Image 1 (cartoon, rainbow, N blue to C red):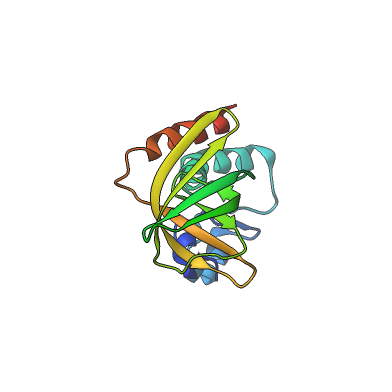
Image 2: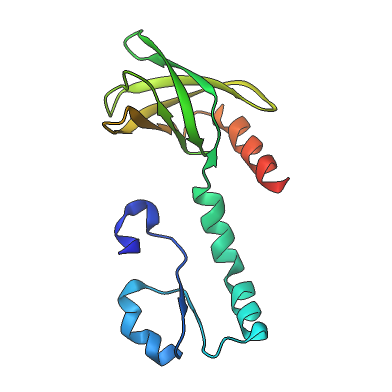
Length: 158
């Protein structure tokens, strides 16, 4: 089910076909909007426009930008790693390295992005997979994260 994952709890779900009454049988899926059959351009546009704010909120909240850059990682115990980013968002990033740190590890990452000069952000390792990838969730109290948020907003607006 789409909403069972915490990261998908606010995902926008559109239903297609049937009437609103038909869609009630799928109410456990928490469908946000239903395109009625037969599909008509004007009613479809009206539905999409009315759901636009839901979609924009979802997009801004979870957008992940696929970008590859070298990332320096300073571990809390003084160790250092170099990794390659895979995706980045204002809340964290996924990376790949030969020796990924353990989940729960406190880290400080540093990296540059296209037009964003080097930035440093504190975080913690939130997950690790057997394919040498791992994720870092940025510390929400680290004010340095704002530069990254501003860069992502600008990137999305261009």
